[in-house]
Image (cartoon, rainbow over all chains, first blue to last red; front, side, top):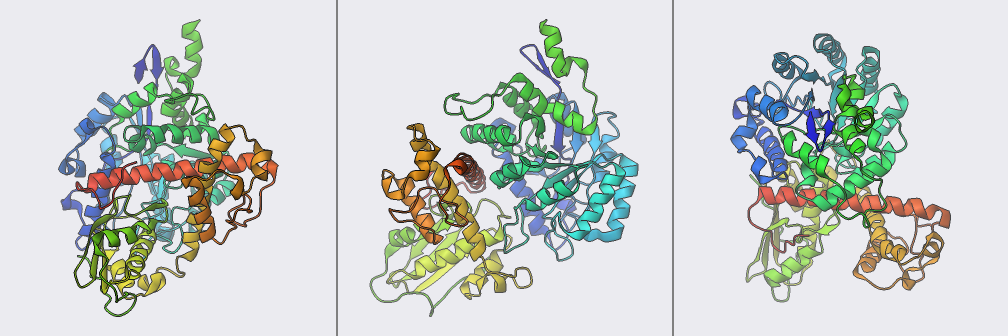
Length: 339
Length: 249
């Protein structure tokens, strides 16, 4: 929980990781990709405040203690949602798998939710593993990574027939939060691989599922906004928006936030630190302090209130994941304390 | 390791005196990142550029990440190659993309003039014309916002904006850029063409469609600008030295 000026913010970090990208986990023959990937992530960290930068060595592999300290002790997070990314063609044990996350998280009861993942190219065996993971780890959501390389294929779309089988399985299993991530992406090579229209179709066809588009579709924020405004079950995951813009490009951050508030709305935006790309502490503090820099220039955009920030930082994700919010952090607590 | 791209016979334009490095750099200024709609020079993507007394031009390009989309990367390398080759006095051209997962395929494909689909054999069906056009349409939308914002702030409402022609808008760099992007797409760009058109069809907009159109144009511009900001930040983290012609904005 974060407290500022008498206001209490319940913080759900809805997008974070526990990875091992050190050379001991690189697949032989694919070292350049494993190295290129983690260096690319590390460059993203460079967009945060310099005092929060890590060495590449530390960034490649951090400990359970580091995570607990950065996220919960110093980072104000109440509940964190692990989003796995497998990338097994590049990392021997995977970049961060459901198992790795859960093994660690189970030593800290109540702190984590374990999302799983699937890949339609894994066919029937993948469906079996999905069911098994949901049973073992109680996954209420999954992270879909459409740019993953798999047996010569370099990507997939949510509209692929194979993907619909998995979405049907998710609906049946109660895995209702589908976190979608595009890029840095490859496929289809001759088209715009960041295109989000497949999410649009899937969201229409599966109204019982929530589609949280991570990084708000970056670099296609406009396409994401035009789609999200028409789909009641599409959400904006703010990982990278806050971490990548709030410090490095504050003016664009204000504009992007304004656009998201206009098109998507404060009830459908969720905070994610993207740890360990960025630590949550400065992001939470910065977002609570944030407002448009110049009200006149930004007069097109909806107002940003304390309630807006409470929803974004935790209440919206708590609702999606059925996480109980302490009474003092709920929106009605405001009225109760000020009366 | 990067593949060397050299072309001794085709494309290069012998005759005349070699252009000198500033000349080659000027040619590279005409090459844009299709996604960000900015010159590769001002973005900092030109790592080095030399030209010998005999007219052998050597260009090295770099991008913000190892995994930047290969289709856009291909277009930039191919466009750089074409722009430098077209300069009088250039005898040979070598364009090398560095530090990218698909560098070998891209560099080799551009050198062999293989086109995109052949370079990425088995992975790509079509060439990249439609992709380029998609992003030019986004550039037209962003440019529409740049031109219309000041007009709207000065009190021009949807009806007035829908009635304006390009020739009636006060000249500005933003207007010139918008007209150029429209012309590249084959959309009307002359003085008597309407200011507001649907970039997919070229048809003029009815006044009642104007508010949403401008709202979308604004969002498109902000998206492109925010992406550009992230790309610049990543590039700076990746490379300590500035690119040739790099401008921070």
